[in-house]
Amino acid sequence: MGLCIGKTSARSPWPELPPDLAGLVLCRLPSLADRLSFRAVCRNWRLLANQQGRLLPPALPLINLGPGRYQTIADPDRKLYIRRFAESGCRTRVSFGSWLLFERSDHHRLFLRDLNLSQASTDKIVIPCCYTDHECTDGSCCAAAAAAGHGTSTTRPLVTGLVTSYQKIVVCSPDHRLLAAIMHTGRDGTDVSFAVSRQGTDSWSICASDYRDIIYHHGKIFALSYNEELLTHDPAQPCRIEQIIDEWPATAAAAGDASEYFRVNNHLVVSSDGRKLLMVRWSIPSRNDGINHGMKLQVFEADLETGEWAEVKDLGGQVLFLSRACSRALGSSSTEHLVDESCWGGNRVFILGVDWAWRRLGAARCCRYCKRIADGVPGYCVYNMASGEVEFVLLKGGYRMENPRSEWFFPELFIEHD
Image (cartoon, rainbow, N blue to C red; front, side):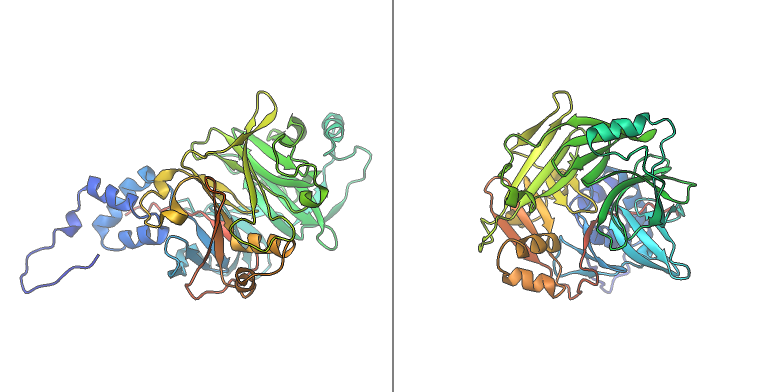
């Protein structure tokens, strides 16, 4: 958007862009980087962006490449270093949706900050560095958990330790008072636990183990077990477990194949309209040497009334972005103005290149995409729900991933007050 400066001194009409026209322009900018560039043109355009901010479709996610570096996927040749995501005296660790995990350089304490908040906001959530096994007060919640096969024992002594790493952190209440996490514990970090923490406490409380994914939906914490059972934890009493679905989907690919079972990836996703809870399962068959036909992917909707998984063949124009740290569904309005329909039409599922490459290396011989990912080149693959084909995209911005575990990052347009 350049201006041709001639010899006349006539005032440019661009700053007086009508609000409805500004909204149309912003809706056609799916990248957060482009929306920030729109705001930077002049003060009037920044005010227009503020007015339109809540009406815009969600921006496409960035890929978090490592401390302070992000890359847009709407323009593979464009790289970003967004300083407003930084915190003085802190190192950026990982991202969980719109939240960034920071580590203070002086004493290595962790805290979360939500990048959907206004720039002036200083809300931060301190993250405990240690955990304790849940200590039940009356035994009822632990008995229910043990009956479901996911709980702690009332006779087990209280154990404390340090958290090795976080697979996922979910903020479970509007006031940010309750956190839920899948974390790695133990001396070698191989123990996977589900834990909760309330603000004001100095440790996590472990409630269960061996969950593949968790998500906050309709006021409850939903958890997916390794057997693809769906369970819920009540935020008021997180150690109480209720089993919603007690078996994996009847139409799941290779449900009885033990070798396939250990290669399955599972993700819980809330639909773009916030109404449905979806589960995505994907895997790469063993001894697969191709790319376009080398992935099994299925989407299921949780029927909370009948307690069953129902397979979904059509996403209704939605686009799903999957990763261990955060999975999200965007409506078709976020991608309808992109030119490349081969990758950006609806009914597609996006998987981070590092996740795809790691699973492929465990199932088949290495390909050129795996080698590029191993060299630190960020990328992603796109699964077409209609055709079953896979498209792989390597980003060309020049940055290399500092952390082998890159994640999707979903910041929204900042609302600044002038």
